[in-house]
Image (tube, rainbow, N blue to C red; front, side, top):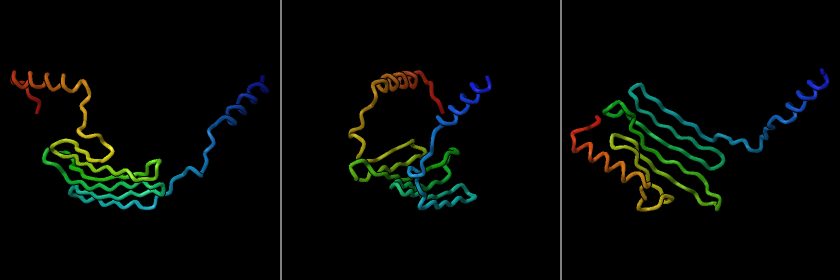
Length: 126
């Protein structure tokens, strides 16, 4: 019985995932600035081409207003870039990767219709 248990444990150890350092990504830059007043800035860059920059300020309703940009290499060697803003008006994003005009998922029309009905009945969420 001991031999079976030892063989089983050896099989488990042998089948454990092996980590290859060749897939590790080096961090080239990681600059962060956080102020006591809620403002922040950061820049992150990795050796695989991923870059992310963002800055934020406190919002009027307790949220963080953030604007930023990130980029990453595509398989064809070009660089994808995405710019975004998140604030009192919601989340907005710009990128040549996104289709324009942005198609709404099929359920959005139904949700908008329900919201309009509720607004007409005086039901609001604030």
